Length: 317
Image (tube, rainbow, N blue to C red; front, side, top):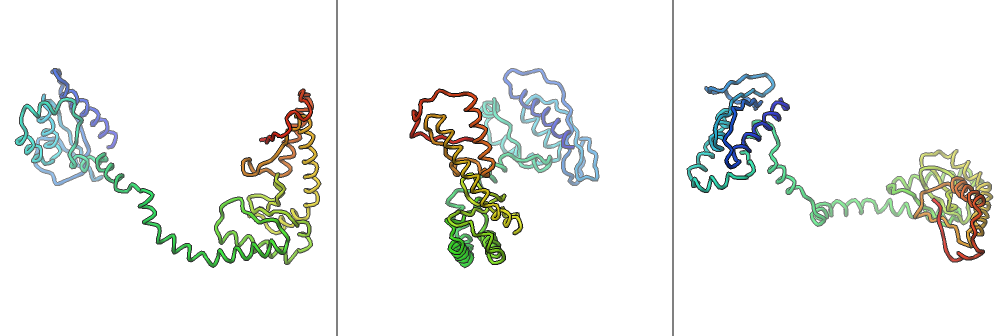
């Protein structure tokens, strides 16, 4: 039904556009069929067939040569009211009507959209304008709710600060961070998990002094030297990470030596890793990147004068 309506509407638009073209005289009778919503059938010469789907097929032939007669025929064929068209015709002057019909876009009556099921563009525009949200209106609508949620979360926020302070002090950590914007409740839960591990296995956390713990998506050590605890991992995985810290520290020393060797080959330029600007890499991933870059430098033998680029910094991605 929708396809029939769309095809008929295209042909109807073409017919009406031709009516509005100055000097156009060649018209062929055009037969159209529309599926419209069922109403009480009335006596009409129009061929109608009813179905159980809530729509009826209306077929009619266009053969008029002026816009007004055509529109009236269409409305009559679909059993729609023509009173508004007749009132407009009485109140308007013929010469003004003739001028206004030239190159004027077709504007359908509201009843057309209700019967055909098509969307009314004017109504959609009005709805969009009504629901358009500005920053001020959004703040007005959500201020009370935001204040209520903030007050409700204050005890949990205090609990988070307490847990963070106690663990940082107990383990002598430099900081505790989160890579992602987890909610306050999730952060408290993660700190409680770390606190339980401290109570159960205090010996495995003896090498964390002065370090930063970051709760993230995976466990290990980051390229910046931070201890990463995967939030989806269980205590067993965290324990393995803490037990491997001495090996991580050895790899970190090798990484610093590799950065120094690259610096010497590039005229004293300093190789740095900026956590805020680069993807989150593990220490192993960053070491592999540096090692690959170092081997390429050795093969190319770039002619840099020693310390000619001293004072500059570079990052590798």
